[in-house]
Length: 472
Length: 98
Image 1 (cartoon, each protein chain N blue to C red):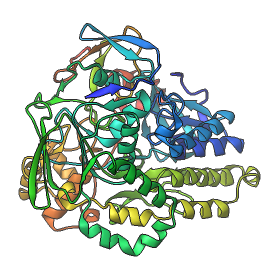
Image 2: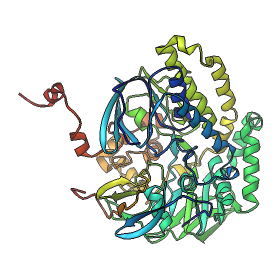
Image 3: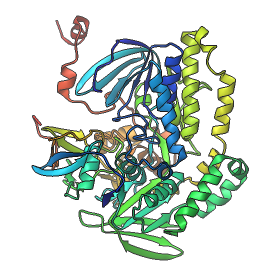
Image 4: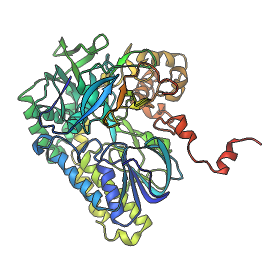
């Protein structure tokens, strides 16, 4: 599995083997383009279809039909001529479409005529007091363990937050005889009214019936507390209890495992480091790349598909992957494009897949208190910087996330801002009375994943490379 | 914190955590195997020495950093277990030469 790419040049390089990347790579390869798919994980699937080719959870009802839809995508990819490399860590992409990838501890370089980024989403930071304690994890983390290793919670477990994934995870844990003691729903009551105007599209989308039956399934077995505020976790070196306010009453319960979730946001690191322009999305409260209708970014040759292009869910991601691949085929091999489904068909598929999304985004828009922490709550997990530290820096002159690095090293740890970036932007925006767009984001640079100096030093160098840095 | 579902029929893989033999399953990541093992897998952070366990399990948070077969700062959630693998819980910064 851990072999270097077979060639130095490809027509299309797809990064990420989730729904969008699988669909894009298969489409591109079927059209006869030389296609390389690079993926960080052990097997295909990304997060939604994680471990689709290897999961020990073989009873299809437990993970559900939406999960197993991923098997067809993997089959199409495997039937195609696309070259696929897993456990491949892409650490650089530049505007010349040169890609550096670390495979088995050695770096390789490939050049593409088109790059399709399908780096997907990550869970929105959930910075509450105590969120760094051992025993506090994301809901997605628990789902990853469930899908890839059939592991389920068996201690006292609380799930807190909001959004479709939370209910899906709860249903899956219960189906596998795992334990959930309580679900703390943090959805703000006002969101229900705000979402109402978008209800028709949602009611007529496939999300509605599925979501309703899942919530019923979970509520029949688990106590659900709604309108939860002031959530915090505490313990001495290990999670011991969770505290919250609901219905005007504070409650503290002993807990072994707390699973947090308040939606997902685009994983922007690679795209931003390549120089792709991003804008603040006021509805989804995150950075989204500036794209045309085919997913082309502001850097010629780089397209973005899937949740990395703005959160749309798995079905939309598959279609966006096909659209980005079709655009690449149209550009590189127009004759082959004629044999693929027409762009108009794909765009109408996408509209169908995105139906109901605005309702979900509005209903599950996380509350300010769970996005913008205060006091001693940790913002940057890597460098252990608190909200108070950030605000103190603002008070003495830090103007934005990049200046803050010099004051506090926020975003300079190994996660490179993935777990603090949105919080820092919103916190500084609020403190300075500016919009997140005005405050901006970290200037991200390669390597976007840490690699060792030894690996960098072992990279083959041309004479010109050496001359560029050696005097005389 | 976590238990294995009975339907999991994957073959066992023996790994060592700080020298102690631990039963994992083929296809587990190092982090999943550690969390399933019941052993104290808390690392200590490089900055304050605070105890941490994996948070995201998908390669973004770096709270799963661990020494694997003598190499420090590996993301345990992205590395599959292998027979005889030597895991060391990382306390503090990665050491030079490790």
